[in-house]
Length: 427
Image 1 (cartoon, rainbow, N blue to C red):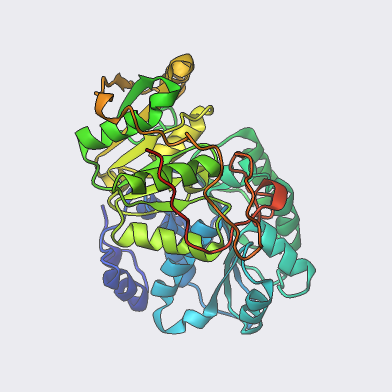
Image 2: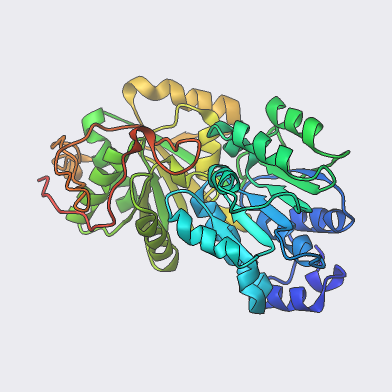
């Protein structure tokens, strides 16, 4: 692997990378940065956790700024990923942080409009909010020279396809475009053919083996009422250093989070019903010192936190690709990791599907759950979350985690306030 100091980068960029303790390029960075610096359009397929953010930000920082309107547009599927890209961009820009702006749904559009009025040349955001700002006349796209689509397959899965095509049509055809994706379905290749100029293809790793090789895969079958006991048994046996616990719905996430607290296990909480401030605080606390994060699929893509040792699927995903994206939060940058999935007895077929589709072997664990069998996370069906700010004190039905196309609200427009959760004993 090359050192960044050997890649003909500006001294200021190399110094910024050194401050971030980045001295050696990863494979995707070594392949992508020189090609991007030559002005080529690129389609890059690489697994999550391989260093893609710097692969496109470093060549962006090599540019000479030519105007006082936005020249760089980076699109990401979630607010969390957009914020993470922004934070890396600010570190690379160092003294010129005002030249970078981040925009996303769920935050004040007026404040984001004010940020854009300061003429940043680099804009990072979610497609829905970028579209809204353009239609309001707050964001110009006719000067874009460099455009990045990060986690393109996820943006399409979340329903951003129309917004992406709208934005691409409003930017100059002469722009340089970089598209990054873990998978390359036909719809992504169709976008590439329509909106890119003779793109060069870069592929890192085997497309037939999308799951990080250093992850060990396990599962346990459980009666539905003993799933939480199975979770506690796994934690007791394997003592995860840092783990994300994935569940299917916002309601379940809140219940699991609070029941863990009742057992003296501190955890952060992450789902689309929380305010943006609460989500950012949860991620920061988990990254800095947290041991457990209870999350819905909103955390399955684009969140880059070092040191995650275990991914625990409290609810097995129906889609094998979702399994890939979840477990990709562990074993990042070649570290080792474990993935553990709990299935009810009538869900065993999901294990076979995950194994077949992702070419992995999942070892069955026999866990002693007797000492935890009396603990029930779902004995009370009433949600623990209260919207104090909105005056809502009733219950709400469990719902699948689902971001609207503009990335601002989950299904039904439901949004929690940024208030601490109440506690209810379950034993």
